[in-house]
Image (cartoon, rainbow, N blue to C red; front, side, top):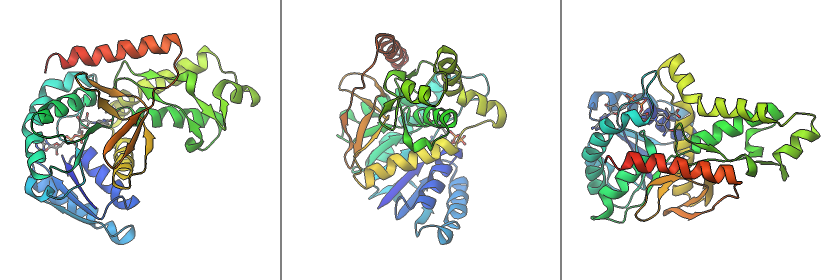
Amino acid sequence: MKVGVVGAGLVGATAAFAMVLRGSCSELVMVDKNEQRAEAEAADIAHAAPMSHAVRVSSGGYEQLSGARVVVLAAGVNQKPGESRLDLLARNAAVFREVVPQVARAAPDAVLLVATNPVDVLTTLTARLLAHSSAQPVIGSGTVLDSARFRSLLAGRSRLDPQNVHGYVIGEHGDSEVLAWSGVSVAGQPLGEFLEGRGILFDDVFRSEIDAAVRGAAAKIIGGKQATYYGIGAALARITEAVLRDRRSVLTVSAAASGDVAYSLPRVVGGAGVLETLMPKLDAPEQEALERSVAVIRAAAAHL
Ligand SMILES: NC(=O)C1=CN([C@@H]2O[C@H](COP(=O)(O)OP(=O)(O)OC[C@H]3O[C@@H](n4cnc5c(N)ncnc54)[C@H](O)[C@@H]3O)[C@@H](O)[C@H]2O)C=CC1
Ligand SMILES: CC(=O)C(=O)O
């Protein structure tokens, strides 16, 4: 099973490394306008295969993507401290207008997995660029990373394995994202009841601290080391596996309903990309926040 990664920078290379460590695929091709960078990253990552999984890693031009089942799009600029994801739109839309047609020509049967920011608007753009030529599935990594951050912080407070905390961040992968508190559960119990049973106060202070930490995670990490890449690298490997193995995993990926913009909800991901959308139960403030978040993406997409 072959995977392509376009954009061999920090996110693309970390996703490729995660796929080798996890054995997500059997072949991986890296493409970048900086061919030397792609070649060097591919060689470095290939040297991890003997210690992990027998993935054949190489670099090359777009034609090398032929036969790929998933192509990760991670090309483009990242945020500098103080920039928002939406500030990257004009620069990264130009990159996508150049990259997407070449990927579609080389790998017409691949699911395209967008990671570049602003991810919801670029997922929308990718789907629009392909709308007239192919019915190729397009998924954005959306809030898979934010949901992981949410679960990881809740698990820390609850002293549990993050895999046993179920909760979703929905809407924009960006400043307007929505933490869907009303649906969080642990061991079949609503989060509030679970925490109460452990003597942990589940109040506005608890919620606002976690909210600020999830919403501000990227800015904090970028302030400390210029970029984020480990979390998203693992998320991209996880989404890729859901497609390659037809896992039917529930993940908060970004996808566009026909005629609308892409945004994140819990969605069933399998061999053909997004198979189904599972609308979570939201309380009224969460529903209103989701509508405001989608409006932010629509306003940005109007500039495409
Ligand atoms: N969706 C998410 O949750 C996350 C998204 N990101 C986003 O991922 C993107 C990439 O970030 P990094 O890897 O840190 O940046 P980077 O600067 O390390 O790598 C970007 C790569 O894209 C390549 N590139 C640029 N234009 C190209 C073109 N026209 N054709 C082919 N390759 C091209 C560059 O040569 C470079 O190697 C950014 O937009 C960043 O904001 C980052 C973290 C999380
Ligand atoms: C950079 C980015 O989008 C993130 O780490 O969430």
